[in-house]
Length: 97
Image (cartoon, rainbow, N blue to C red; front, side):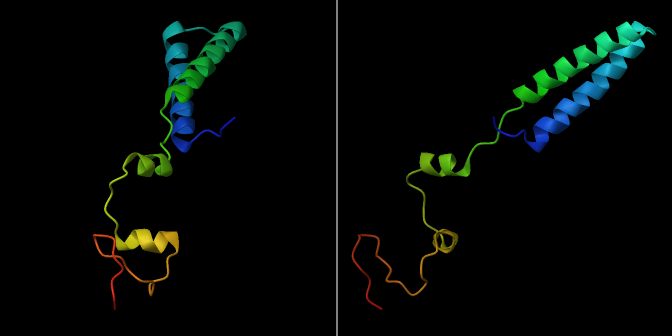
């Protein structure tokens, strides 16, 4: 099971706190059973909100979805290419230095 993201934890926790306070104030209950029912309902609502927060997309999936991306100097640095390697011209021929 994947770990929850920070956004999921924040939205779920905020929903639990806010919905518990709102339901306690609106219901006016003072019994232990009433408070327990409201607490369980708030936990369920917080879990529902946390699970519906969209998960972040993977950077690799986004990169694979754009096959005709222009190459920049940052791309060569992240792939670990040697800076002194032979470069290729736009038509695929090896450039002479």
